[in-house]
Image (cartoon, rainbow over all chains, first blue to last red; front, side, top):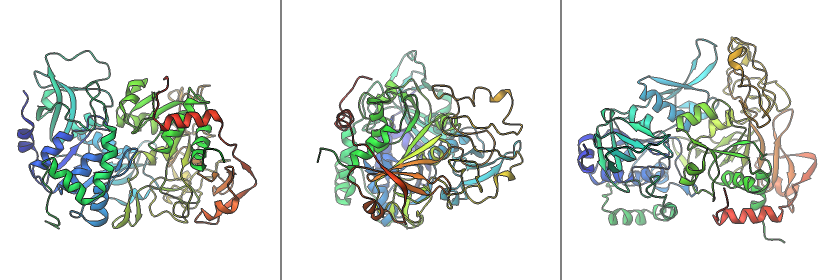
Length: 273
Length: 320
């Protein structure tokens, strides 16, 4: 029931797609992201609550034209320098930005998973984020008259997540910090999951998220596919790499050296602005 | 001079504001340090909540990110991110929210998004993250930020999180209920058909539940009463538009502590760290800083506080 990662990306991720690679600090699908870059995808709209290193890398490689996000930092370390270089200096090309709060984007995925057009929340009001009227607006409760924030649903073409386990039928199990993965996977038209390993039977586990095989487009076995993020029970977060990335990503040349050393093709500058 | 500086003092002063039993939403950076310092000193039963979904986490060492495995491993529960923001933050189940800022104005409005225009920023900052909803819904908000004219600005370039609004009148005053307009100037809150009542009595107290049909009645039971452990909803009533918490009741800097003026909500310097002068604090502020009559000194850090701070910074483990 599993397929090679390269095949899954080739079949399901196309130029110009809206792609969400989710994982809230934990279970970030780095290996899948690198495969997307390796296959030379371009003009993607990347959606992710916390772009993290994984999108800093993809943005620096020229994969993305647009970013939809809620917090674009290297957590506990500082800036995402490739993201900043793209927004501030248009390197390697211009990057359009749509931004939410965490609550807003989490609810946008939830609405997408429910196939509803929008979600309701109390946040946003009075912030300048509301100026993005194509994604954030207000709605009046028909029952109480309270004015609330409304956020447009997010439905990615493809969502990619990493998980601990798949069974022989291609059902998926993940646990620990489960973030917004269930919502992002169910909001997508196609969901790809990379897993640490395949087992005959899932262990008993309270608090685990199960994604049945019939909501998934592909399952791929990619041990350690979340590095330098982590998979609880399999690995720990490589905090040293998160610190090291700050140095690599600060400098365009150092970044390109890193990309070359890892077999990741960098896009030409200003190819389609 | 002893082996601590004003930045240490900022973290220590912030930690002191947490009480045993407080439910505290912890963000990355200085808030993370301060909250864990409180847990290792005077408030071992302070409940730490991380927006990654970890509820009542007891990290054995200082987590680098808000999603370190130690947080999930030691938490009493781990919930999804949508649940965290809807059922816990948005619903008002957080007593204290800690926030940072790249810019803050005299009414506690916070920018963490861009310097310059949003379309063409000179500096792209990380963005809002969980802060807008924490700022709106936490019982009270403590901002931890280093004070400088670049940070303490007359007007923030972008409002990422609302403090007391552009005029300071967009949220009820700490002393009363004369909240005048919705955060974006949508008119009196009384325009709500439900007739919004006072926005709640205080950080931990249960406010009036609003007199409208949605507020009163059996379904409100259990949501309003803040028990001795601070259980229950910490925000305010269930009706009424706009932010529900008390807002940024404290801004703690490397110079001292600012609090909103009881009448105007303008941030006013009320306490100074040892060795800091009023003149220096004024110079570090981009607006005409108000200073409280009879400004107080912040007591210097104790040996216990300093030892715990050093241990956390070195990422040494401690018993959970």
